Image 1 (cartoon, rainbow, N blue to C red):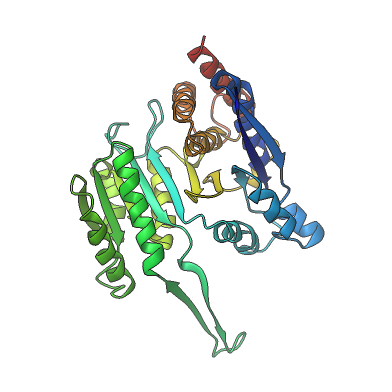
Image 2 (image 1 turned 90 degrees about the horizontal axis):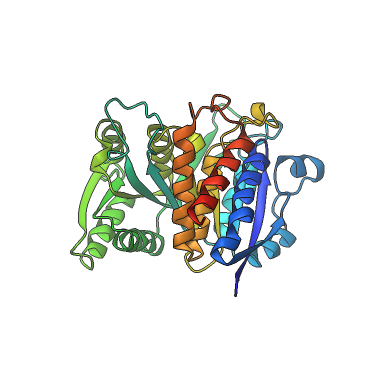
Amino acid sequence: MSKEFNITLLPGDGTGPEVVNEAVKVLENTSEQYKIKFNFTNNDLGGDRYLNTGELVTEKDIEQFKNSDAVLLGAIGHPDVKPGILEQGILLKLRKEFDQYINLRPVVLYPGVETPLANKSPEDINFVVVRENTEGLYAGAGGYIHFGTENEIATQESINSYYAIHRCIKYAFEYTKNNNRKKITLCAKTNVLTYAHDLWERIFYDVAKDYPEIETDYGHVDAVCMWMVKNPEWFDVIVTDNMFGDIITDLGAMIQGGMGIAAGGNINPEGVSMFEPIGGSAPKYTNKNVINPLACIGAAAMMVKQLGEENYAEDIEKAIIETAIKLDSLSAGKMGMSTSEVGDSVVKYMQQVND
């Protein structure tokens, strides 16, 4: 008897629909092999809907997502919408509404993919960033005084609660234990952010007492950035706050070969999680069939794993690796294959696995 999963597709803006289409193609053409049925429904949140109706997330949208087992996102970002409106009104809104308190970002260099780092191989670049996803500087605390005058003052406050930090760090240790990882590095800035990140450090080492088999390490965020470039092999799992996680995962995307390969998940372990390629909407490439969909297909693999289908997820990952080896370059427009051909290649390898 097949398992059924209800998946809401949020293709979004720009090239988002194209990469989501390829991820859906992979799932639709391979799920039967694993005795799984996906029921896909679409949601049109994004820049076009906002421009046409002024709507961001509505109660109807929330209800649709609540009835889903997971959400697969393409990209949010429209050149005709002021930066921040869609990001705060859709992405951050959904993360908070569904308490997706973990942003999980594997930083993995696939065989055949070029990294800008000299003399580094897939054996050197294979770590995971666990980012707290609901608080910090992204919590929305702050405001203006004397707006629009020469005396204007803007404040943006970093919110760090024991509850949110503890569950994030606990997740990181559990992830490390359950995924054959050996070490966790806390990335913070305790020498300057002496209140918030002192709390992070105290909780980190307190939780670590329950996991004596896991090695612990600490790095200031600036040092972590340097060592990610010079010695990425030092890292296994990195746990960090919202802002620093946002920054170092983009650096991670570059050292693993570019945004076209980087996938991520916004995870509520007990609720509805949302998975996405971490690149933007790339509007200049819209409908040209040249954008790399591997990151979105990788996000679909993360989604499948979160739903409990680990073997299926591993096979998708293997097919992504085989396809990546074939590509001349992972830069948009220089892949050696079109967007749809990349999806076809992943499907082909997946079907071969079970022949």
